[in-house]
Image 1: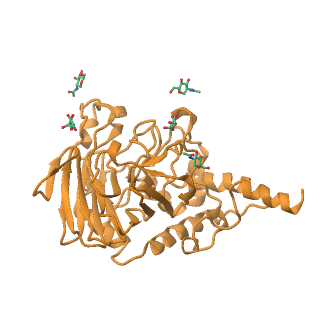
Image 2 (image 1 turned 180 degrees about the horizontal axis):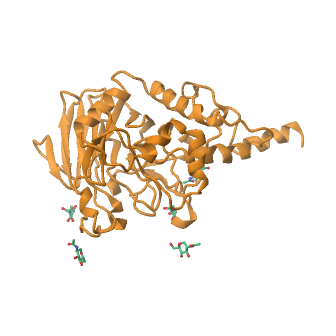
Image 3 (image 1 turned 90 degrees about the horizontal axis):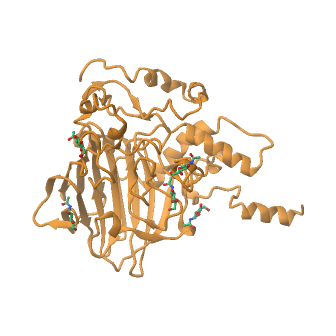
Length: 410
Ligand SMILES: *[C@@H]1O[C@H](CO)[C@@H](O)[C@H](O)[C@H]1NC(C)=O
Ligand SMILES: *[C@@H]1O[C@H](CO)[C@@H](O)[C@H](O)[C@H]1NC(C)=O
Ligand SMILES: *[C@@H]1O[C@H](CO)[C@@H](O)[C@H](O)[C@H]1NC(C)=O
Ligand SMILES: *[C@@H]1O[C@H](CO)[C@@H](O)[C@H](O)[C@H]1NC(C)=O
Ligand SMILES: *[C@@H]1O[C@H](CO)[C@@H](O)[C@H](O)[C@H]1NC(C)=O
């Protein structure tokens, strides 16, 4: 093969030796991380024809992973499916595997013009060539439908999502937080179709906070113990770096005038920014304990003023520290892509469940002291996964093994 045709083959495989990410999101250098392709294992003709993987950003074993939402995810349906042409927000997900369903998620939705809260109304078209996927940085350009484009960029730490939106200046921009949504089915054994939650807007703190009791694994929980987790909730605290020119609480698609807080079902809230606002950063702390703990997680992991580049750099460094431990000799570019993507997949679950030295346990519905993990799979994983974790995450193994213990109550 001539040099020129070898070069063309390399180009047409969609891979280059350099990072796909812009330079400020390619630090530290890591050949291994550059070869991760987070789209591998997504889609498939049927749920069982898919690896159930999503192009999410977060560090290894993160409590929450962040992903562009193309679908209402459910058992057998991932929140992102590469065949889709619209994005309906950015979801902080805890769905560990396609067969497990979602729990306690939160969605951040950028928009312009009139506020659109319902999933079916808020989708924005995007084109593939504006999308960059990597373990630590995701970006896409969304078409506002009236001639504008929103650049959406995203990274995350374990308990905090970091989103940055660049809006067209001539359109009135807003960001919506969705706390609770309708579920695609009625849960057995509780018959919940509209999970309950709460939402609150605090313009002085530039925060939207809330909670969500959705837990799709009800459908596979033995009914005898389902009540044990009756207080389960995902909590969030979203803080903006732009002032609110206007804000509102929405229930089932309609704004409730004069309201800043609400409990119930089908809840969202939005903040609209002053005319001409171009860039908005929103950091979303997530917790299983309380809104206050979500706020503490936010302050602890991504303090005020931290740039998206810094968040992404820290997360990329965490991946590089793991993936660079294996160097491949004689591997083709395609081999490297397959290998490092699989390596990346093996270090996502189980996920960190502790926050500030405490954790909520679904075994007894209480908060305990100590470290904990959840989102285990002993079913549908290779037996080699546990031996692999001993090799590549030995520092986490003791806490992973003792996570089911119900020590003392905090
Ligand atoms: C992805 O979308 C395609 C096309 O709509 C669908 O056939 C497939 O079942 C979806 N895959 C999953 C895992 O949801
Ligand atoms: C995959 O699922 C589809 C329907 O969801 C079913 O018709 C098909 O037989 C399944 N294939 C396998 C290999 O299990
Ligand atoms: C976008 O590109 C990805 C990767 O090449 C591909 O898997 C996907 O099907 C494309 N999506 C659409 C809607 O064309
Ligand atoms: C849920 O609905 C089903 C079907 O209507 C009913 O048989 C069952 O008793 C209900 N369960 C509860 C806990 O209400
Ligand atoms: C939500 O609003 C729609 C109309 O937009 C209505 O048909 C539906 O019953 C409402 N759902 C609930 C749970 O209030």
